Figure 1 (cartoon, rainbow, N blue to C red):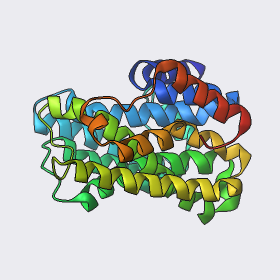
Figure 2: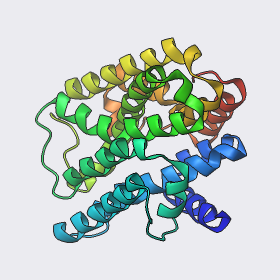
Figure 3: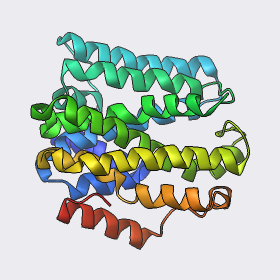
Figure 4: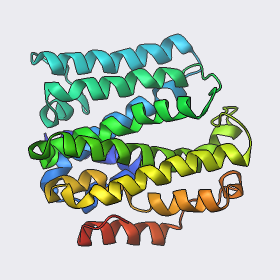
Length: 262
């Protein structure tokens, strides 16, 4: 088990340094939940990008859906350095949210333009919200039930939009069209939706159990990023949204120590 957790941590450290820092800022026991979830998310997110063959990409995504189905059934689960610890970290009731995450990644296999802002939000809600919700519930949010689920929904949208806007230059360089329109108005609309979601999390933050708060640590700095994009949409294409490494680390540390939303 420790070998699997170390493997998950190494995957996350290489491929998702923000979530790696978030997991390392969490209590040691919480890492048994966070590292398998974050490694799963990373493997699923990059599945459509590691091949130019749509059939192979979809086979990879289906492999993860099949693994989740095994976890949901409660029987024998395939041996795998991510799937094995994931099966120990989650419950059958968590599988639908994670399956929705995998299904949404099919859009990345043969990406079509987003017709409008609603399509972007639906995609980001599917790929971001479930991860936070499952982590929060497994870390200790079950007692708060729907309350934590509602906060996770807003948190997933805010974090998803912040990460999406930071990724726009890379996505466009890869030939993708991550915005429903190429205008600053479209960028501002997404930034506004993210800011609203972030404010919803902030209003409800006191109701989140302390044990569940590490699930939200990746949000550190998301509010600042969204506000910057809203004030100056030109920063998105100029790749000027992302905070410096030191500032990002300080915000993560401050959130972990104080329990406040940054």
